[in-house]
Amino acid sequence: MYTPLSAISNIFSSGISFIESMYAKHGATFPSIDEPFQPGPLDEDKALSETIDRVIAAAAQLIALVKPAPRATVEHAVSVGQV
Image (cartoon, rainbow, N blue to C red; front, side, top):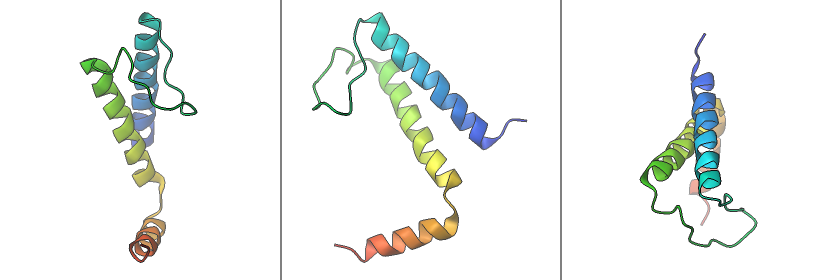
């Protein structure tokens, strides 16, 4: 049975595989979150950018899918009152 969660999982899996293969193909390593941003040789690659965008969208969709609506409502209400 194909579910929304398994569809998101497939987007993550295929997207990450593609991203890693592109970096390996160019002899580069994926940037570390622990290092300051540095422009890289693959920044202008259209297919890579589109794949990264799909993974980001899937991550947002995953959060929306698994977060219970009451929790999302409370978190939003609390955040609106903060400056």
